[in-house]
Image 1 (cartoon, rainbow, N blue to C red):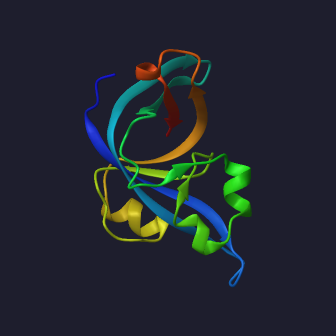
Image 2: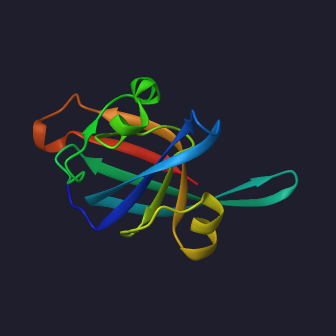
Length: 138
């Protein structure tokens, strides 16, 4: 699979100390980022929306972290979350390497190409070189 960029993943979780949504950051190297503009004609006129597809090969560089499923990730302690990452709806992905932890509002104000994950597909029924995660966002 051809790759064209680096992304920064922000996994959401509930901080048990504050009971607020917080984020853990993971930089992922060697991914494929594709943007599309989808349009459709309805009774109300022309509708347009941007869609982003991110393809993440299993052999990408995940900063030494290991993938686990979203439910298992939520059960981890805050310390253990530093060793793992997941892909889940409502996580955020930013095109590029972001070296700071920020609030979602700040991310959206400061950076272009911030995507909210709305769909995750694990494509592992193929050869090892083709195995990947397919993320759809808006």
